[in-house]
Length: 401
Image 1 (cartoon, helix red, strand yellow):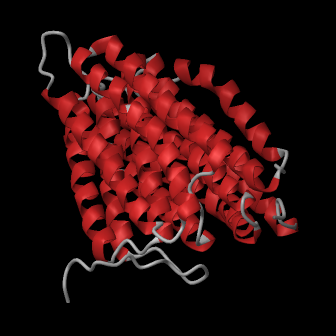
Image 2 (tube, rainbow, N blue to C red; image 1 turned 30 degrees about the vertical axis):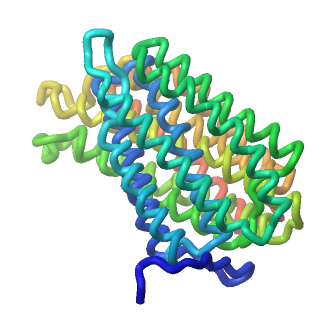
C-alpha cells in the first residue's frame, strides 16, 4: 500500500471515531502544553504567566483547526495523513523552543523565529489540507478564501514580534491573535466558517485531549519534587494533587461533558456549528487553561516543600504568582464548566456559579497559608463541589440536555 494516496477520504457522519493517529497528534500537542508550564515556572511571575497564555492561545487554536480537519476527512489516510505528519513535526519543533520563546535585546532571536516558522507551517498546512478536503463544496471554498485573509494578515505582527522581543513581542503577538481570531469570527458571521460533519467524533476528540492534559498535569508533581520526592510533606502534596486531578476529571465527565455532547449531536446546522465553535473552541479553552495553571501551582507547592527545612512540614507561604496559578487554575476550570454548558443548552445549575464564587473568595486566604495548606484548601473545595454534584445526581440529573 502506498503511503500517499491521491484522494481525500471523507469521514462518516454517524460512525466516525477518533483514530490512533489523531491521538498521536494530541500527544504532541499536550507535550507542547507541558513546555508552556516549564516556560511559566522558571521562575513564575505575572509576566511569564501572561506570556504563557499567549502561547497557549496560539497552540489551542492551531490544534482546534486540525480537529475540524479530521472531522471532515480521515486524518490517517493519504494526503491528509502526510500533511498532518508535517504539521506534527512543526508542532514538535515549536514545543521544543517554547521555553526560549521570548528574548532580551541582547539575546538570540533564533528561538522566537523558529517558533514563528513552525507556527506558520502548522496553520498553512491545515488550511491547504482543509481546502483540498472541500473540493466538492464550492460554497465552503468561497468562505475559506475569505477566512484566509485574517489568518495570513495575522502572520505579519507575529513575525515582527519575534524580531523585536520583550514587551513589543507580547503586544504584537496579542495583536496577531486578535486579527486571527477576531477576523475569523467576523468571517463566520458573513460567509460561514468550518462545518461540523461528525458531532460524535468532535466531542470525543476534545474529551480525549482533556484526559491526556489531566494526566500530563500530574507530571508537574515530579518536576517540582526532584530528588526530594520521598519527603513526607512532598508525598502528601503529591496525593493532594492526585485527588484534585480526580475531582477535575469527575467534575467534567460525570455531568457536563455528556450533556454538551448530547446537545451537540442533537442540534441541527448552523446551531451545531455554533456549539462546536463557541463551546468546544472557546469555553473549552478555559478548562485547558485551568488545568495548566493548576499544574503550575502544584509544581510550585511541591518545589517549596522539597527545598524547605525538614522541620517546616507545611512549607512557607507561596508568592502571589504561585498562588494565582494554583487558585486561578481552579477558578478558570470552574468558570469553564458553566460557560460550556451555557453555549450548548442555555442552562446552568445554580451550584456551578456558587462553586466559582467560593474559589474566588478563597484565593486571598491561599496567599497567607503555608504552601501545603494552600494546596489542601483548594483540593478540599474541589472535593466538596464533586461530592455535592455526586449527591445531587443520585436525586436526579443536574441538568437535562
